[in-house]
Length: 118
Image 1 (cartoon, rainbow, N blue to C red):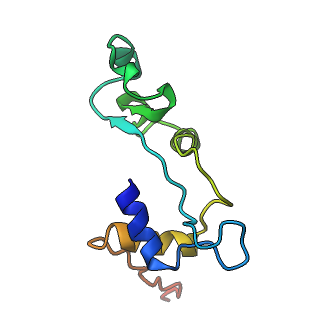
Image 2: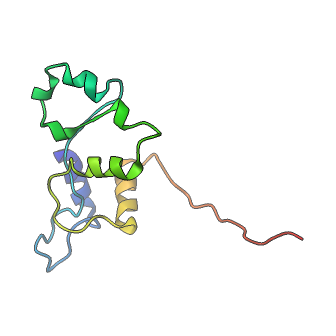
């Protein structure tokens, strides 16, 4: 996590600006969590794995399904990020973060022709 943050801070675009209380610090909030893609919360409760991380740092198979409410899921993910030095990232800030962390992925906006053909 700290290596990723160093990488992000090296970009310069994702830092708090001059004059900000956190000038030069990353605008990207960070935290840690575990995604258990093959066990449910109920199955997990029957183990002693909860001693490894605080309870709010887990997400389970039954919480990542297609039927999961997207807003509830996002809120649970954001609750895993304890340190926030400002507002949430906006889209112009989010896109460079994606390019830095996943350079092999590129999302292109494909133009849409709204003209109707008679």
